[in-house]
Amino acid sequence: MASSTLPQSTSTLTRPLSPLAGVLSYLVPGLGQIVQGRVAKGLLFGVCIYTLFFYGLYLGSGSVTLRGRTYRVSSNVYLPDTVEDEKANRGLTALAQNLYNRPQFAGQFWVGIAAWPAIVQYLSYDRREAAAAEDEVSRLYAQLEQKVDADEEARIRRRIQELEESKALRHPVLGTFMREPSPEAVNAVSNAGDKRLELAWVYTVIAGVLNIMVIYDALAGPAFAAKDHDSEDSQKKD
Image 1 (cartoon, one colour):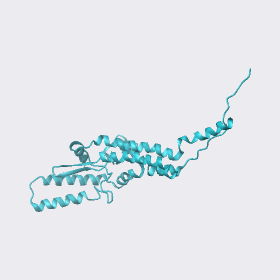
Image 2 (cartoon, one colour; image 1 turned 180 degrees about the vertical axis):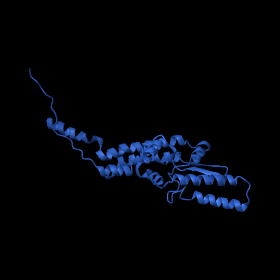
Image 3 (tube, rainbow, N blue to C red; image 1 turned 90 degrees about the vertical axis):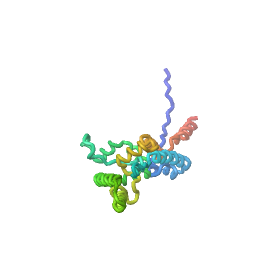
Image 4 (tube, rainbow, N blue to C red; image 1 turned 180 degrees about the horizontal axis):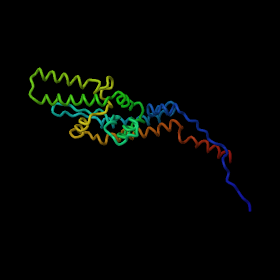
């Protein structure tokens, strides 16, 4: 009995990786593709991802004024410092436990430089100092609700301004942008504001996760690279 074997291609397609392009697309979505010469694709990636991300930032911010006090939430992209508030995960490091408490940031991180202010805020944030300053501000606003003379009111307001501009509550450069908001601010903006804070982070997480695929595309090259190679093999067989 005659036996036949299917022809097989002995050539292999080598696709060198481009780590630099992958890093560039992590830093700025689509930048790696632009450096590789795929400008239109890189711009499309960048516009789409940044539109999702910054629209999510817009939805996740807001401010309301209640009884003379203004509560602000500057961003839904932040990494909280809640280690001492949780007792169930003693086996985790502080960073891992904080990520466990807010896993959204694990997705937001991949959008690149745009999420780095949250890391800077996390590294410079002191939860004890912030809590003490917030408590004092609350007490001072409570004093303003009582009848005080003009001099005392001016003194209280000066002290409130000092606390709100202090390092405990504001970064010297970034201010409150991407800093963990206080629970009082989150509750006030969620209840009295017109924003849907509970949905806003979805946009920023989707943007970060999509950029993982953009990073892979820049690292490994375009997916259609093997098409021409297969055509050449077919022509040789003919």
